[in-house]
Image 1 (tube, rainbow, N blue to C red):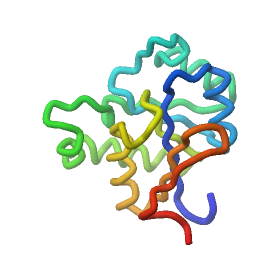
Image 2 (cartoon, one colour):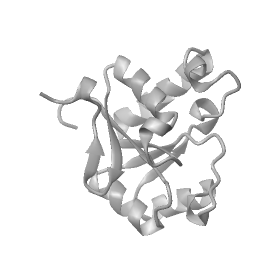
Image 3 (cartoon, rainbow, N blue to C red):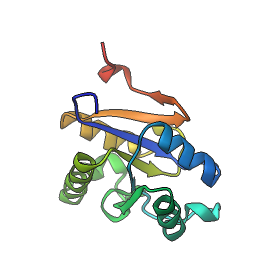
Image 4 (cartoon, rainbow, N blue to C red):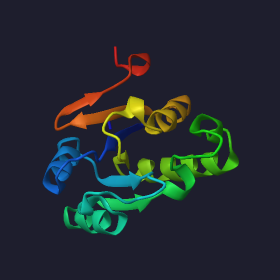
Length: 148
């Protein structure tokens, strides 16, 4: 992992199952950590149970942390990041990502429109380098942490 702690994020968006798996594999992802509070989708293959099976068939691990890290919080997600519940979820995420090259997943394609940006910010504070996967072979590392 380039000698540092790296973690990735990705949105399911409207990708086909094949495209989604291809994008993950293009970044060498080994585990997907689902942070959708409500892990359903109008695209059947992105429902929680079907996604777990799809990833397993592709040789990727699936973990669900939507209860701990999912969006749609009453007081807003940024406020939620200061709670013990969020910190506990973040610790679980770090433990998973320390063992396998991991991607945090939710539905929104672009991280700047999604609660993944808040998760990423907190991970950066804890020494993680975060890359947001946009499409196959194309990621975005925010300027504040880009490699020199």
